[in-house]
Length: 62
Image 1 (tube, rainbow, N blue to C red):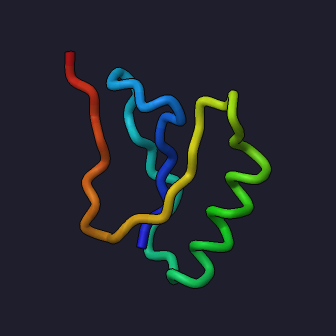
Image 2: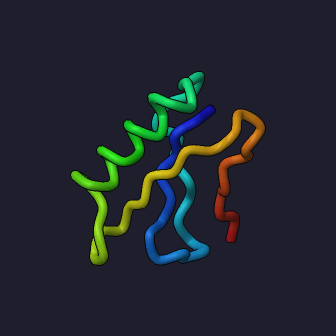
């Protein structure tokens, strides 16, 4: 599994960022919960998410 950082406001012009990969699902969910509690929120531009290994990061191309 991978942990990614997405745009909290779903803007098309913001790329996904890879935080880490090869994470166990159990520990990954705990890490994502911690990251969102500490570094995300209603007004934060970042939102952390646990995704499958085959997930392709979104890259904005103008």
